[in-house]
Image 1 (cartoon, rainbow, N blue to C red):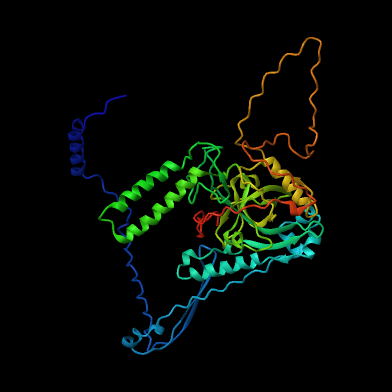
Image 2: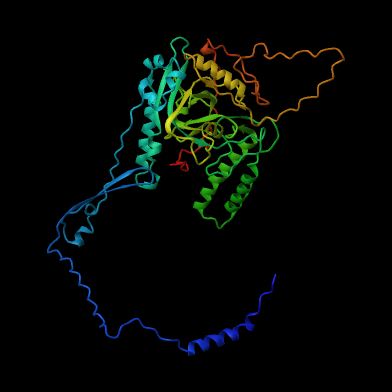
Length: 485
């Protein structure tokens, strides 16, 4: 590389050249013909001032705009003649903004034609749906959901940036209560869109969980006691925050208001650390689960009460996907599922990008179908149990998806012993007796899953009841970060 020449070696030459050029004027050129007279510029006309009014004339003016959350704003300015300003300044009614929110609350879809508008394949996938709809009723869960949406609007009227978006207000097409007359099996049919829930962690199965997304929480409402001594990857960070909060709380200079906030933070961190040490949770990227509004899981005596762990069949694009209820979300929103489900519907889905913004996702919830003992999802059992439940409401056509356990560590196959010379090896049967022909040979049972009693599909009352594992501090009912709005 050639060394850079020092500046002092070129500065005198540059300065001398500049002086010489400035002192030697160059030739003068002119394109002006001396015989041609120079035109006189025309002066610009003086603008006529707007006449001043002789008196104030009241008027009305309207504008139409649109907020980022989808609200269409109709603004109107009306004026009138008042008293002198020293009086009007003191009168509250002289300067008023009337905020009038008008919202059309949608009716629930109930007929087969209305439901098929969202997904035209449903009548084929669920052959008995037409007859089930004849005796169905719109669930008061639907009415409760929209009442909570309206209440949310009322609470946030003074903060336009927090108003429920148009997308999230119209996020539910219907919630219907279905009952099969032959088996007495109950089911909730929910039509909605699908947002993404990226929560959950389970150190027993995997410590490779991405907790960097906004609003991430390492736990889900569905949980079970830990089965190993492997620590959670999310404990050290919380222990550090706890130590910092306790140190600040103990300082004499900390203001009382700050101490109150720190006390709440310390209690919350202690609960989280305790839960992470005691329990395992679902993992969004590995476990197919859905999220229901929190209020639906708190209606104790409701005949269609869903509980954590209840089986759900998610229907989209001609396929049926087995899942469970794994978490509770804000009570004024519906339609949310784990990353495992979301990416199966759309490979581009992530914590910030929903797989479907249309109301074309059907969630078929089977209340009272959860296993008696919660545990890591047994994907093979989930498939078979959902097939039984679908058969209890008239059957199904199409493909019932078979999930593979992406967390299972494959066990290396032992080397086969050499057969004695001249003795042929025994043939391996292609089908194990008693195995459902629809079951996938690739499906694997999650290690450590507790066995559950066999349930006859012809006896709905034999379904084990699930104990709710609701955690009050799990998911505060607040607006989450927008996902694709």
